[in-house]
Amino acid sequence: MEIAANGILSLLNLAILLLERQLAAQVRGFERNGDFSEHLSGVRKRALSGSR
Image (cartoon, rainbow, N blue to C red):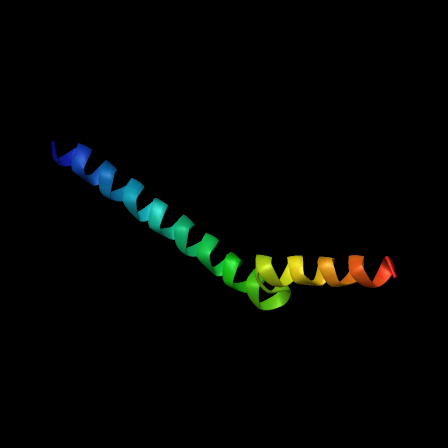
């Protein structure tokens, strides 16, 4: 029982580590590229300016 509990704790710690890394990568991406709606707005502006 104790071995199983230690294994579960190890897996939880690994999951937390991976989630923290993923969150940090998403923050970096947001800082560099903005969010999805900002991206769509830029695409729309470029499309509208090219069509006139």
